[in-house]
Amino acid sequence: SSAPTTTGDLHLQAGSPAIEAGTSMGAPATDLDGNPRPSICAFDIGAYEFQGTVLLPTASCQNATIEVDAMGQSTLDPLEVDNGSTADCGLQNMTVAPNTFDCSHIGTPQSVTLTVTDVNNNTATCSATVTVQDNTPPTAVCLNPTIGLDANGQASITTADVFDAANSSDNCGNPYPVFVTPNTFDCSNIGANTVTLQIIDLHGNTALCNATVTVVDNI
Image 1 (cartoon, rainbow, N blue to C red):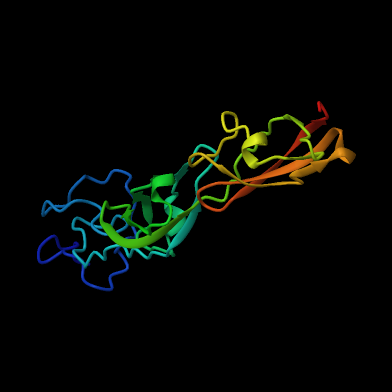
Image 2 (cartoon, rainbow, N blue to C red; image 1 turned 45 degrees about the horizontal axis):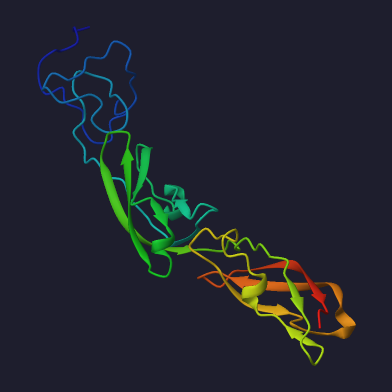
């Protein structure tokens, strides 16, 4: 039999079983034409890498809704806006920018860009809309006032009498009082009375606290 030929065109042809059938063991960084190895996803068998079309990854996005935390901050994970991005050779990395948000972003849709990178460092991008919400209720702290009945045996309070503004708090600004109940008293209420104060934050979250109102008759 004749010896194997070492002449002619030894480049791989489309459909060759040698395409992506090799390993990296002992393989040089480039083929005899100087092309990087691997050229697509895996090493080819032979002296030349098949120069087929390298398909770019496909970035696929979906919109997302996130909440700020107790500190008024939120970090977006790329997976929250990814909608099944793919790559023929596999994805190695996924990032999203911007990815940090705070209370100032609430109420305005935020545009973000997802970038996916395949194992050959090819990239693709897509855009998504992120809605930032605040669903954390404020912290309500009450004062415990003492009030006196008037000449008619009547007394009343307002929210300012029981709202401890200095110690009440919220993750997105200062809360403010809505109502206190009960807020009127008479001689039958002399002594300690429990009242309930409701406060609300800038985004509609509410909280309650109880106060003790001591009614006295000094007249």
